[in-house]
Length: 211
Image 1 (spheres, rainbow, N blue to C red):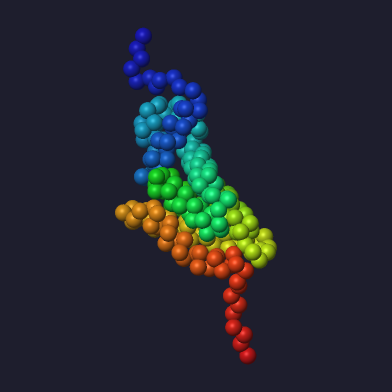
Image 2 (cartoon, helix red, strand yellow):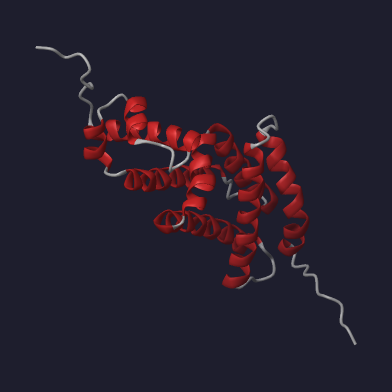
């Protein structure tokens, strides 16, 4: 019996991980529209019918990749945060974990940020969900660490600002890979902590009164 060209039988979870790894690689290099299921199946080492059988259409596969990479990133950040430390160390450890993930998984960030954000539709919903989880994580950190009580809206708005700044800097970093992750994380830390540090201590800036 001939066996050449047949994919080795693997557990479903292993095969799906193999497919998504290949898809993230192809989507990050070619973009959603230019990526083909033929190339993804070739990189994954399986037939195209098997690719469709496991994870559906290209749209479904792309959405699955976004969800998986977002989950991986959020797990890395949550694991990296040191909740028993001082507020500045908590924030620093979270930023370091975020940029560490992006640096080690640049293809993931290409798919999560550049590709997903430009496609719109259901992919934008996946991206919004990821941002919401990130904002909730940062907001909880700010609420726990500030001396002056912060309302939920105040904490969420500040967290949204930090998440947006982190995304923008990570996107810039894709074009400047020569910069070390720790250096990039420290720049954002210095930028935001000058403001957050005062907020943690209960010091709030007010605009000058105008007559």
